[in-house]
Length: 175
Image 1 (cartoon, rainbow, N blue to C red):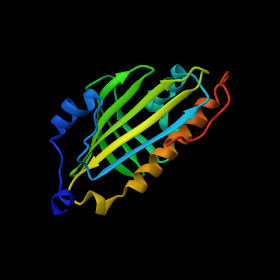
Image 2: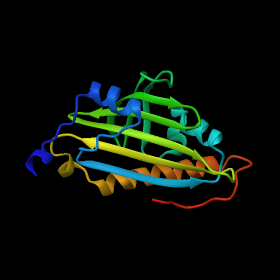
Image 3: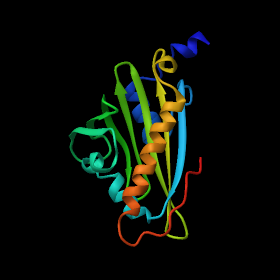
């Protein structure tokens, strides 16, 4: 139990190169969350909104982009979520399919995956997965808070994507 409480995870380089780049979370992390939502818009429309980080503050509450260059594998970006400053680096940028990055705040490291699954009816299932590790992580944060942030972000992404013209009917949270 104590070893889990003080688990630091792999180095940020290993977490990025051997986990995130290959679509893997750190399954030993103290906090792991996964949520899905079906959005009434095609994957390309959802991707355009999701991958345009510069516009996140216009639709995603509690986000601020501090520094952003190209959205490409290996590129760094800095942002704030709920006022917390984060340093991140893109691991997977697969248009219409997946946007994954690693992030760090103090001694805490995370892998964030956003996977798009086109559905036959023109809608898109978006799944957000995250592993969050660091000493005392489960005392500083909780899986419930992590999941609530993901579900808020998914709901706001859904609203932004469905506000665009030609979106099929909406659906709800799946997981």
